[in-house]
Length: 88
Image 1 (cartoon, rainbow, N blue to C red):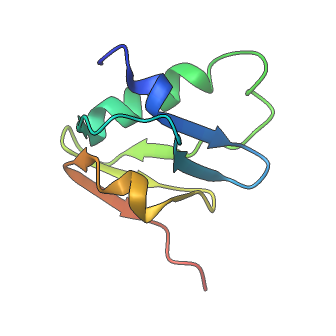
Image 2 (image 1 turned 135 degrees about the horizontal axis):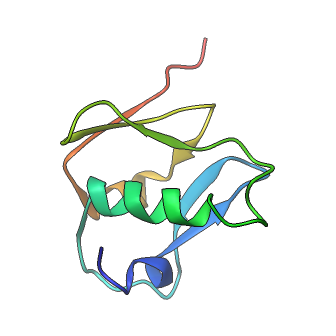
Image 3 (image 1 turned 60 degrees about the vertical axis):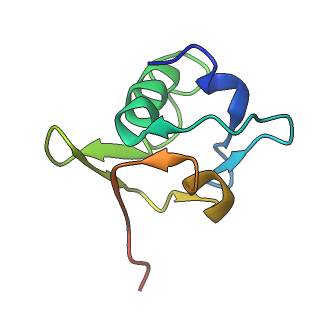
C-alpha cells in the first residue's frame, strides 16, 4: 500500500462515509490499497467499535458493506473492482 493513501482519504465512521481529502493529490490507488488501508485502520482500538466497511470477495474484487459509502470524487482515484451495498 502506498504511504500517501491516508493523506488523501478521510474516514467518517459515524456517517459511514469515505471521502477525498481537500488536500489530496491526483494520485490513483488500487481498490486493494483501499482494502488494506481500511483493514489496518479498523484494527486499531479507536475504530473497533465501528462496523468494518469493506470485505474481499476475491483477490481482485472488493465490496463496501454495512451501509458504508464512498464519495464519487474519491472513487475516481481508485482502480479496480469496488462494489457497493444496495440500500433497500
